[in-house]
Length: 140
Length: 140
Image (cartoon, rainbow over all chains, first blue to last red; front, side, top):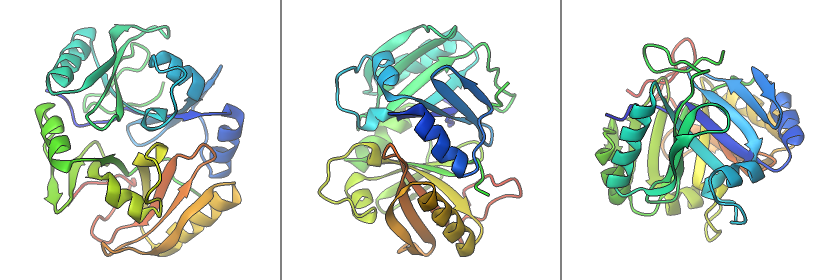
């Protein structure tokens, strides 16, 4: 059963410093800021600013025009098996696989699909970001 | 001070019935389904499926290619004055106004801007969707 939640919204950005400056001027303060990415705690979920170029590479869409895929909506799960099951269910429902679930360079496990309108969803298990009992995400 | 929250994620879709069927097959159940739009309760926030064409009209982007603007991230506020203040702050920070805050056809008050990468944010006051103390949204 797929939970009705978005754990992480990732906005692809052309210039991370420019984007951080803009969101900073709005009053957003990053909880974590690593090389090439910034994470912001929201209510039980997180927002990320991430290089649009790296995002396209990770999704296997390099060289394509940006568009719907410049935002990804992520659902996080507790286990790799849960990611696999949810991914299979999405494909069975008519989603287009962009990247089958696999070990990710950041130490977790994730896959990407596009819904019938091309909206990109990531299904992920992040061992460094345990989910609360209710499925909500609090950045460590 | 802008709250670090997304109250509503709206996905623009070409065919609402097709989209509802897809999300239904994933196990998502709409909390509200009105003419041309479906709302899904998430953890303290909501997801909407909405006609991409109507969405483009509402944003004043009709006839433009879909793209980043086919997803909108909404922050809801308690008063029109809070919407105005947050909108002014975004413009001062370098956002591009798409639609200044105004009375909306659905009975609330809302404005749209694009961040420096073109990601669309809606700032809204919805009298029918009161926010909880912590700013989270539960669909009525």
